[in-house]
Length: 132
Image 1: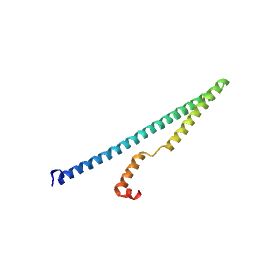
Image 2 (image 1 turned 135 degrees about the vertical axis):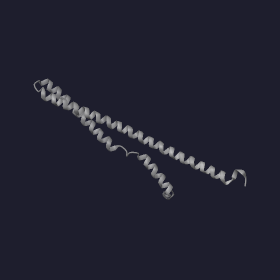
Image 3 (image 1 turned 45 degrees about the horizontal axis):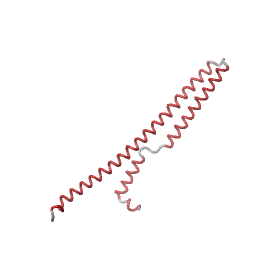
Image 4 (image 1 turned 120 degrees about the vertical axis):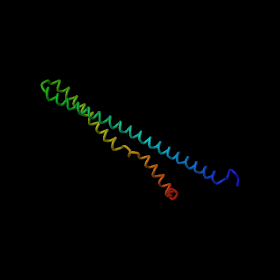
């Protein structure tokens, strides 16, 4: 046996290669996880913005409705208040519709990460070769 082909060094090199491969797999999965979390954070921010716009518009519409009832004596003021009320109410409805559409269309939490882990599970169980 030569010095370079001893079983101990070959096993050690194989274990190092295996550890390197596991590290690369873990790094890839963590990158996918980070991407999923970043996407969910952006989605949550959009949801919060739509909800805040909707709540503020509904509040303004409520205030305008109260003022509309209180100052029912002036004809021009009533028209102005009615227009403002309708505008704020329309913005609130639009915001709530956008919020509903965004919530319904967003992807499942960590969907890409879970899909990659399922692929890994299939590959490790031997089903990967059968699907090819």
